[in-house]
Length: 362
Image 1 (cartoon, helix red, strand yellow):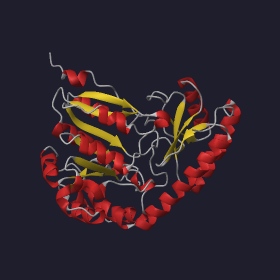
Image 2 (cartoon, helix red, strand yellow):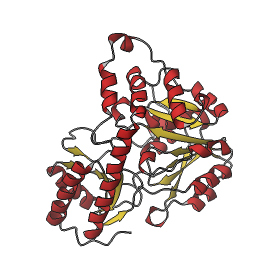
Image 3 (cartoon, helix red, strand yellow):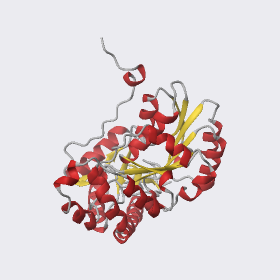
């Protein structure tokens, strides 16, 4: 009887709650207003011949490389950052190799690593979810072949410093070190300018968050030219669809739109953190487009909070099952009008559930 590989049969499941998402979607860290009008105009100009051809990504990669300040040979467009993670696992992991992650973090790191047959080593975050730079370096062994770090981290919003990340890359010269900068626009810190100091360092970006292109599934992986040549071998030549390729240049050309959206998200982030502090709700200062807050002590508390917010037309994400996140929810930020709706619903929910007697923030 046909049976999948052992590594696949034992994979943990990742089932994001995508169905029935009616209301203001502050649960998936998406752009809450959508993409630039320039992208919509480009979509209107697409014709049937554009969809009849196989996608050609080289010209768009050249445009993006100029925007990022890298060479086209150092860059690969991917089907979201998810594919970038998958490609690194396929390129560098053999069954039995070790792969390191910091927990809590994005679930797909573990899933793709395990699918490749690797042994995943989870390094717990420090107090208040501080990046455990020393513990991570201490966990590197001769069997370590891949280290994945979200920076800023999801779901905590914590950030590792440039020096900490570069020390890790230098401490593991035989390992691929991925720094996932999915939330770069909301913090402004990047390792792109330092990528040539460590040929084992890779940086991933997405256009799903600030750019509002989550539905088109497009991201980018940047790394050493020779290493990227190898990664391209395991990538499909048609991994990014023609519609995404047509829209990306328009999206990155409208930086005024991105800067305005990011500015309003940062403002909303500060307003939310102030409201949580005033209510005595513990939260962790964030460098991303979301805030993690502890609304209770158990998963039942967080589930009740999520349901009460949903009844008020606001969707937030229960993160209570993540390492160290018992009773926590993650709340995505948007522009001012969405922040107004969020804070009103938040105040009403706190009053209804009586959770405004919690500990003060970290």
